[in-house]
Image (tube, rainbow, N blue to C red; front, side, top):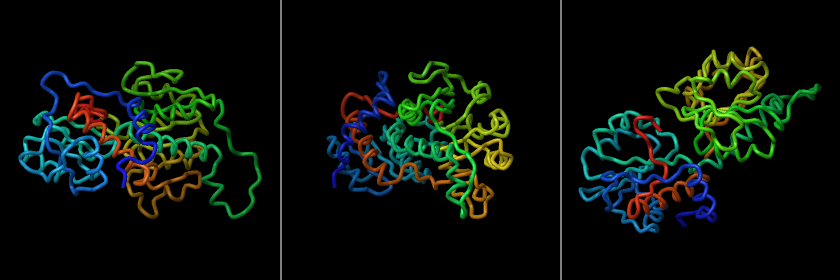
Length: 339
């Protein structure tokens, strides 16, 4: 099995570098190169990717200097590995979001470890899913696919020329911006920094979220889940939207107050919503969100395993080269920021 799917060495790598610039380590911060352990289990697909980049894969030992962690959870096991093997200087995490490791990252100052994630690596499939949910929501597909009789009426809207607010400015948001360009939309990015985002008509800081929402036709949540962004989209945020807006979340369910989302759908404040993530997750059977006929819920499937394995393998390959070479890591995590 090839470590990188056809095309990943071009498109995937190119996209990852564009979305998440390489990190050049300051003096004294570059991890010491050495054997790499693939944990919790040594998946041959990723072993091959590491070896293709010139790395040496070996079982966890006192000689281990790098870890490729392939579980989206199990932070206690990773903590134990780091505590018992203090020579580890670099850890690659498997997903763009690192909220499952928040406790471990909070203690990162106590460990001289460089953390990298897959942020930016999965931008294309997730942004594609966001666009699909946006189009389906504008066209009221949530209700249409449930219908068992021919409905009249002229409901449904085009995406062309709409005002779109994107919460976040990471790799997914940037890729979505590119995909939205042919629709001639007016995009506002909401993020921590006020630095303008190329391709967006305006960039506002998070404290101005409600200003951005005031005239939005479509809102897409694509931000990281941190202590500062949990339930950022609450009842007040939904109330700030004009009636009839469309809401899409492909980031993390915890960014949104689910009860407020259901209330906004039931009241008609939202015309429709498309969510790939929920809080709680999995969404329990019988939850009111399932009964919202103007909602589409997909089961956290924007980036399936078949989609992301070659993309993660490419990220691993890139960062193994950085580990062994110039230190130009991609997807470096800021433990203090939580992403």
